[in-house]
Length: 113
Length: 112
Image 1 (cartoon, each protein chain N blue to C red):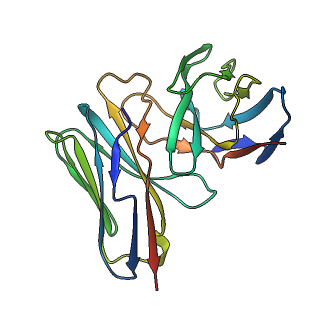
Image 2 (cartoon, rainbow over the protein chains, first blue to last red):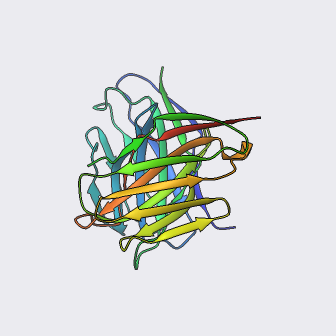
């Protein structure tokens, strides 16, 4: 069954700690995205990647980092520089070759301890 | 660049109709509509491309007015399962990588 898997479902971060959120897809999609969702704010784009070893900053990239070493994987690291990391994080992917729907994972809820 | 959605929230009785609007200040190439239940992933509803087309999906349809840079989502004869938050995502001509700008969402509650 094809889809996007995010892990963990819940994550807690201590002060000064970096944490990494996992996103894996088996849809053979080229493009992948990370969004942050806060109550009443909609989905805001953090980073996106169109191809392996290449990625671009979205609207709120400060305090986050990503890598794209494999087509299937697009992990997001929330660094200690992100002072307000508590949010719901969604990973998505889409095929290229024209406008196509984005497929979302089930999300990771990150909280500060 | 974030599109503006209206209304912010709406409460319906089962069987009633609703319209959700999405407006952009920039020229749009496409508009995507998604529905999200609380704590779950957004689910794709439909895409509209520039050209003013209208699409339908069961009792949910949408239109895209390219000149006004607006899209509207129409929910007719609403069902309890329609409850959730509806987001529009817009793609402008200047976007690359098919990244979308999402609105803040419209919360829809359908009551018995």
